[in-house]
Length: 157
Image 1 (tube, rainbow, N blue to C red):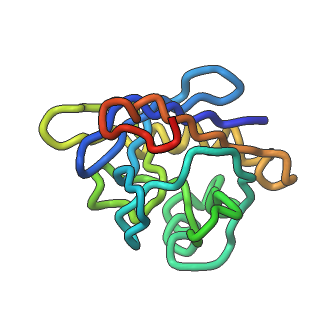
Image 2 (tube, rainbow, N blue to C red):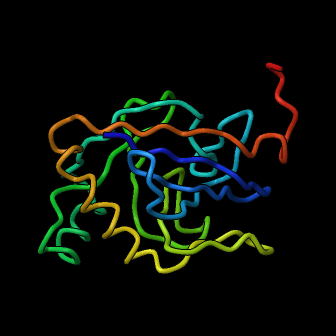
């Protein structure tokens, strides 16, 4: 099973994306901005493909275990991202709610400050679709940068 994150809009503070599961749109995503050099808690992860498993430690897991006791089995954890640790998929609305993680929303705004809305509903929908795959180590996530031409000229082109 695969989650695809197609980044389509970036500002100096945040990036918006379309989040699909096996090619079907599920939600909008919001992350920190692109940076050529990583700045802790203010940089989105590099484009690429990563494994997603469940993380059952930490404060996010504890909070979500209480908030979503009827279905929560662990946080969706994006694994083995070079120079990043504990990248999660979780609820939030603006770049202030993330430190490199992917936030999920039912709607998105690219006005002055990019944001996603109805995050809890979108998170529940995504989580329930992918949790079994994450628990059995067969869930991947692919980040695709379609926004790069808006924010910088790639030094590799």
